[in-house]
Length: 238
Image (cartoon, rainbow, N blue to C red; front, side, top):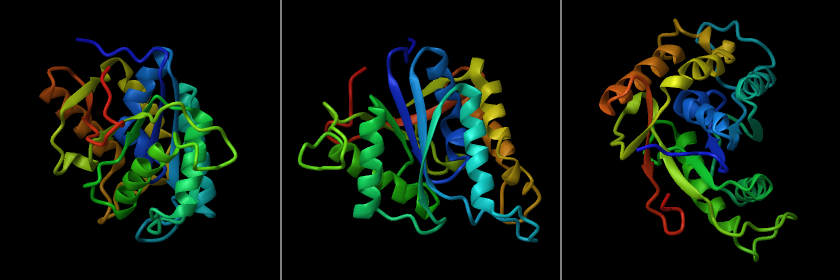
């Protein structure tokens, strides 16, 4: 069985710069190669992703924005920024309207979202924002200055960081796109330089281990795992 992403419009919504590359970069790369329009939304600035021993680049938020843009360029993706400070993302009316407007401009058929049970509060807040904004994006009564979508997009829940507490329902084979995923994550040099922080797991190691373990689980070399959204009109037959 093979899922075909051609003619789809796929938008990931993630909390921090590097989350998309870590959790769904291979799927985005595959979708782009198959002809889909691809993009992602970074909800937080990445301004607090500093080494414990100091010595971070300044201003870090600007550095990480450029890293995200470089990662998107690897696969010809579009990247959007909501601009919330790290650790302060919440499901507020302001953030809902901003994300709703992005949905209406990009017009996704499929949205990739964090699990509501992932480890970081910003990840969980981003998941809540997706469920709210994906609904309001198709509501004519919600006015943002852009036309409402014809229908709410489908939503898939992405794997958690390190796969902790996540029971996959299906996986996307990214074997042919693993190198693109590595290049995308490699754009985030400010974070890869934190590999020896005692409170920070090396991103490249996390990525390799998770993609390999999901690949083994789903009988391929490299894979990314997902769950269907259970929310009405966000759960879609393909």
